[in-house]
Image (cartoon, rainbow, N blue to C red):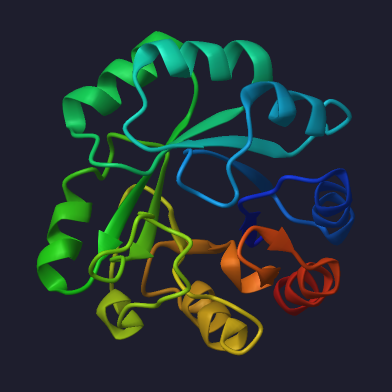
Amino acid sequence: MKTQIKICGLSTPEAVASVVTGGASHLGFIFFSKSPRHVSPQQAGELISNVSGLETVAVTVNADNIYLDEIVELMNPTMLQLHGSEDLPRVAEVKSRYRLPVIKALAIRDETDLEKARSYDGAVDLLLLDAKPPKGADLPGGNGVTFDWSLLKGLQTRTPILLSGGIDLGNVDEAMSRVRDTSNSIIGLDVSSGVESTPGAKDISKIEAFLAACI
């Protein structure tokens, strides 16, 4: 299987174009007002209007159905990412209501968190394992911190996994070694702050270099 690379937090046509040209598999758009990467459903729809053949992911944090309805109508994503505290019944409700593949993001710090992640195995289409945010952080992801990747050794799930949290050009080779390790279910990487010059500002040269290192 081709390595899956998701570049998240896109907000400009230039960044979208570089991700498409660079060969990423997933484009992520953030719908969370506290994030410096926040876009409106209309903006996201315009940004992907000429994108085809790639997964376009709407990333939400405990969004209600009214907001999800708006996102699905105006953006028309191919996938939904739930990056909040959505439990299994809520995941099932979202999948039933929108008939779209769902990514569930889970915050990892230790083996206990990994056990919680396993509880979603089979209930979603992709698991995204992110680092737990620092104490007092406003954002559930995109904080530029990693977790102990050695926890992933031998992690086998029915659901494919994207590794996230603090991945950048400095550790992309190590992250890719986790993807290539056939003892686990990791099929790709998710990056956001690691390809930015400042929070929310994607750096085209970093995107290009990151994708070149992965693909």
